[in-house]
Length: 577
Picture 1: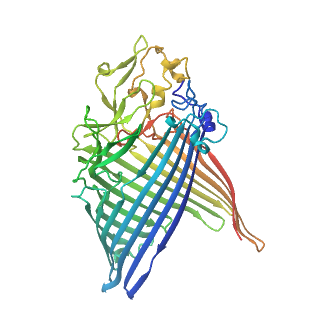
Picture 2: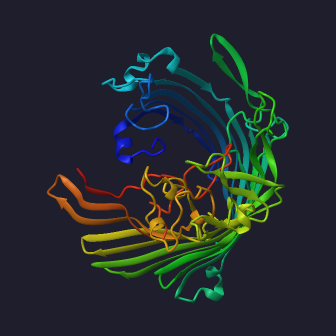
Picture 3: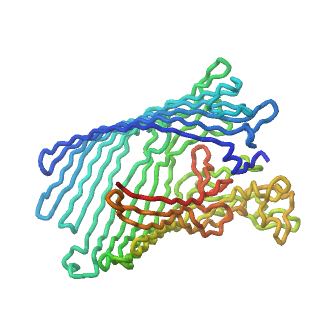
């Protein structure tokens, strides 16, 4: 079947090699006016060039690659890129006791950054059984099967003015105030600058006299803060009128890329944090607890033309009304259970409890495009007020009828909120053990409360595909036999719980030490990654997010024929001479 590819065959048929050369340079002079006042300047450049050669052999069964009739098959691309980042920073630093027990640490500064990105990609199709690497013979195909695409992104310039002041009274009371004014050429001419203040306060209670004699308490600090930050993570030039130049049969034309929006402004994140840090029993137990509440406004969004649209009408980037909130509780704790010359044992863990919600957005924004047979123009996720971000909205599946056809609430005419791809608990856990020269450490991660849309089961493993490919085993062992004529359709049937706990990596070390006068610090180790996962998800891995964005709107929690993550083992030796 042309829509399925054997992963081993794909590995044999494909080649993708990149080579990047980078030159870094910087100079950072400084001058001390007094012991408490210092000027610093930083000038730096990062110049990077890259070459990428990619090819797929003609025998692989992919559309526009597999040989078919007069088309010999095969694909190759040769790309080169040039990326330049220039940065220039000036700061004036002040650090001085300005009163009895009161210290001020302050900085004011200016920063300018310039980004340049350009490159070219050549593609060719129709190599057939050519024995050499396709990228070494790009000219071997018919001229009609070659393309050349060059680009030069609009230069992005970022100019920032910033100031920060930290007041510390007797190491008990701390107050921090920060202000940034960031101007970026990415935004509309009327809103180039964004203004981002933040404030934080901390009370080191342990240093108060009434707790100084509490021996088992090593640290107790209460913190609170509020701040605003800006986001400019979208394509350069998106606020300006832009065109592509297209060449066809010795003629050329202009095609719209995006329309001008002089009012486009910074996306803004406002966050409030309240937390406590503690350390107990000679720092054998330490940790922190934080409450956070983050609100994102002025969402950067690529608005596509309404259908039908006039030819040449392009995307317009806008700031969406409404907001996205993320709030919750984050806690971490570390415990040194045993610590002596021969044995040590410690445990650590963290958990984040989080809930997000969309408010104030008019209508709905579709994303989460499905793939495969019968899935053209089908989506399963939306951004809509009153629902979590990327809420799964589709038909509600109610099993099979007596004839083996799918049953849906309201016969499938009404779509329901049936899944949430966002976990409500994110977990981390680590363990470290040492006995004399042997040590062991392991790191786990996990998530709870997330749903995954199994697009693979929906379109690839459906029973109607029996006879052309493998199908899901549970479909042929159910109490009601599904009909081979049951249509492939998106529904809550393919939404699965994505809870998991994974042993991400583990390492065993054996320290030998010095050998003679030449070898120092000899250490042998064995490391394993992605060792096991505990989950009820039927796909390869619940820690998955295949890109199913639509017109630049991202998606989450959709799995479609993703390659399983590899389990790797490393053996090594560390030493110095």
